[in-house]
Length: 414
Image (cartoon, rainbow, N blue to C red; front, side):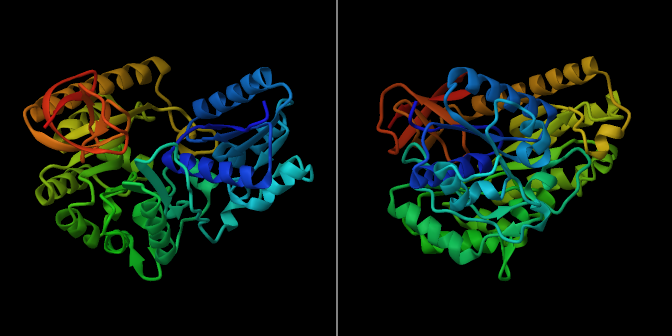
């Protein structure tokens, strides 16, 4: 192969950064490389990254294999020890043009991983190609100052830092000029956004004011306890801010939340959803939930199950707890693997039932879709809608919902 192959694990921010690396690699003239952008959120994610590296070496024996991302930052020694790996890049280094010029020119050292905890700026990039013309991602923040007991990510991403609002607005303006219909503001902890006295809600207002032709603006995962008043007002008043929020909840039990070092209570999570729904009745919520956290009793787990209904969660990402070396939770009394697996199954079943009930409640309604493929579009609340006839990707289509199945709504054009 002469072209480069990029493999991405993990979050939307990683997907964004993969595109930045692709453009740096192309500009540098790097060829015949496999770049693995890793995730460190669980031990399983690290295992999958190592597996991908071995597979890449088998499939592309002559390629230059570069490993980067959060796992490369937190566990550089693991990847440096792999004979299949040619180069290891840290999370800051992977976003520099110089690193890719050195890779292309043969001047790169085998491992270039700096101290991410000293990072002071959030690198931002104008990404020109997301593989389509429907949705683009804009990084507004990086890093995290919180220390949840299960999470290694602050040590892979460094301290929280925000992109200047003028830079965010300029990137959004350019993406709209390039034809993107929808923009997602993304980061590690975007509700901690604070730059030049501007908080996230004010940033949303600035973007929408500066980009009158932008049809849709979305937010990636938010922390409910950090949501500022201006953001809530924007949710109520800005029609182009889409009615979908993905919430970092993790548990529905107060004791487990304390042992996780989360900063919200169960009651605060429920109250946030009630407030947001009152402000925007058509809103939908997604959430991250962990099953089988250390010391979780059956009663505590039941509180998480009930949280799905109490908050009206429509899209749940359920994670069976996996002890992450280097985190306080890994030193807590662990549940058996069988119990963790069973609770994750039950939580997913509860979430699937809630999602199905919500889809059923939408049958008969009309909505506007942004088509992502010829036959699948997204409603404003992020629900997938399968259409019965082809439409051009990137087109906006009015549809009536006539049914649902397979986790999607079924629509007919109006």
